[in-house]
Image 1: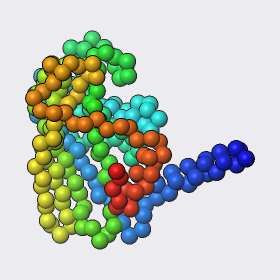
Image 2 (image 1 turned 90 degrees about the horizontal axis):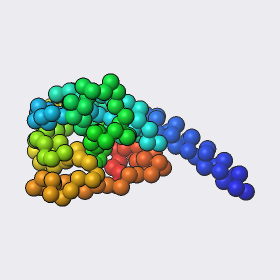
Image 3 (image 1 turned 60 degrees about the vertical axis):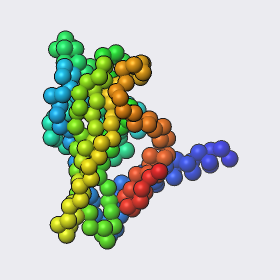
Length: 208
């Protein structure tokens, strides 16, 4: 009996993944461009995008460039902003992203993936801007400043946002915290939750 249950789960998994990669009918793809500005305010730190797969392994890393769109690759991947002291980069040809104590990870992943929306929705493009505000102790602080939505009828909606984010070590003390409150750390979604979420997004639905 257990074998049949396991086999059913495997078939369901394969079917869900294959369906999630299909383009829904009567929909259009809305690309999302996430950019960083004012990188010079990071002082003696360089910012990198580090991409993790669903199983937590690191599949890609790249230095974040001023005004260039970030790309996490496969839609179920997660992209984290990681800070590395420039002096440390000079002394090391490669970085062990998981174990290097000089590496400072952001508390949450950034969503850079676009989505499919029903053709009745005229949204055609999104752009999100983050601005580095400076360094506090061992943290590089950045905020999301603009969220621009462009529509096929020429309409453009720009929301000004000031939600703080930080690239910080988990062991940092409260005394080194900035004056504002940092974003609430969300629990990582389980494997099945991520797949289900990706499936919902392709039909224009939001995930919780």
